[in-house]
Image 1 (cartoon, rainbow, N blue to C red):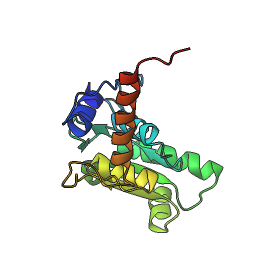
Image 2 (cartoon, helix red, strand yellow):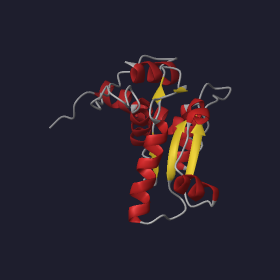
Image 3 (cartoon, rainbow, N blue to C red):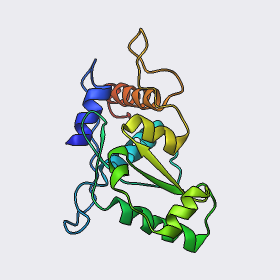
Image 4 (tube, rainbow, N blue to C red):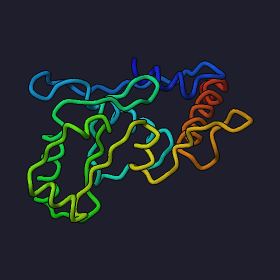
Length: 180
């Protein structure tokens, strides 16, 4: 429902959206708990609708609210170190890293090898407050978070591509099923 709320708030201001998507990530409520994948779910939907690929060199964690605010999660240090270990085993390339909620930054304490790799630019941490920041990091395409005088997102932005795709879905639905 959080993702549905985000889409309604961001893309359903002028017309009702008939778009419905459902993603499920099983949750494990223990040492590392909560809805840490909800921002990732939203990035995946935005990427798919905009038909803009997400960089696979960046791991993502963070909860999201209906307005696109990225919220803190548990176990940030462990998640960063875990992805670092995977990258190191496969070979650090200098462009890998983890995107986390900015509110988690003060609580992150990393092993020396991870901290050294970050300091040396062989591994990165991106801290974000909003979905717009995250989608830009993941795709390299501007989010387009501000509408123009006509109420549209700027051309060439992720949000404009999503908005155009949702409008195309509505047109297709209005035309009805193809006749044989």
